[in-house]
Length: 112
Image (tube, rainbow, N blue to C red; front, side):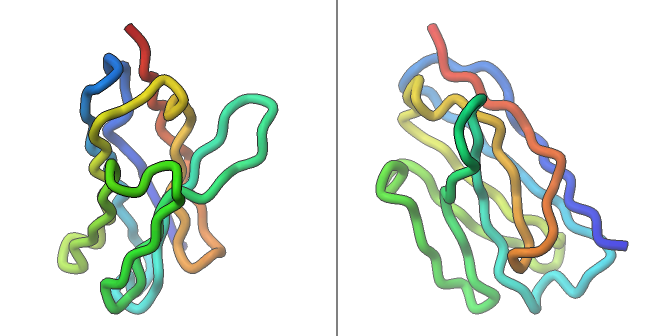
């Protein structure tokens, strides 16, 4: 059974940083692309970043230059380093494996 567990969310002031983690189990993690998405109330879930099984990365324009996605295949974990956070980054952040499996989400709130 595939499980994805996100952590690292919380309250941060504008301009601050957070690092999200998503730990996977029940799957050959290194064989799949994995990404981060986010959702705010009343809006559709939107793409944030993706890292391929080969290590290539893609970012949404809204986070390019501020967020960095990385993976540790030995730990079966993907990370999202978020810097220069803005209030509009406030959302529940979800990791997604291979377009099929979702975690439960972790809330990030950017507010003074």
